[in-house]
Image (cartoon, rainbow, N blue to C red; front, side, top):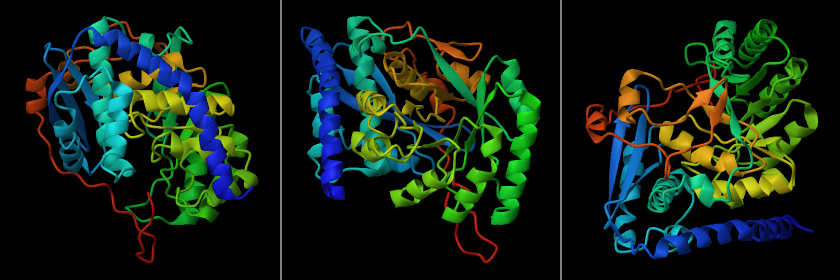
Length: 410
């Protein structure tokens, strides 16, 4: 079978697997029909959180119910906000409980689709639609997705690159944490030195936390093929949970080559979109963990479909989530209902103004595990006054180069 036939077969299987999930959405929509809800408008909020900005979306209805979503993309936040508002003319007057129908319309009708901007805009709206439906039926979203597959959800924490950072996570009750040890020296990537120093950092972390604490690594796609092979083979003895984004995604053959060369567990997916972007990862077993981001991959139902594909091929789901509590809660609703969901990325985000921004709502984490959501809908609210006090500030990602001045990936 040629590659086109192979991928078509995988996507055909994915469609069959996702049909029960689509039915769940249709059943939930039917329950909301009697409410006679109509969308009356959209509004975006871009909130500066220091080195990045969060992009939120509110969807308003004729009954006063308001849904909240997120579509944050670093360094493209103003563009995302405009892309979200492009959907207003299509959505106005529509029933917000027709989530699958509206998603298909936003994705397919414009003809141009895919990529971080268009998919993140759809994701933000879709999350808000689920929030509306859950509020209308007075149940948490995960109850509309089939109910719990587990009583609690394991979390890992994003931390720094020192043993002390990991020990702090351990003290907080977490059993796993992730670091980015492949750090350039003053924005210059010296491959040999960067890999050598990164392996030394990880060895010190392993010694500090012991063998039973899971260490995850985010490579951020910074490695060339040879660098990825070198790094992943050298850390095999450290027993890492996974190395995330060891390669870029333009050529999956590169990832397949790395897979053949190392025993280190691999993960990727934050820059892939919709179920179509994950068929090869799962069916070809290119990674041990897929990492779709609910704010980019297509929203809550699309994340659920990706989880079903992962489950079929016995690949773990570990959703990407460096964003706000909105993203975290949307991910947790899917994690709660999805058997393949193994662990959820999280950040502390516990400063007082952030607590005020979300009015004290958000995930409830105890000893490294999140409780099942209990509030109707998404379970998190956005205070517009606090949002207005932290307006958008343009930010740029770091610019890394090799010693000869050429541009590196990241």
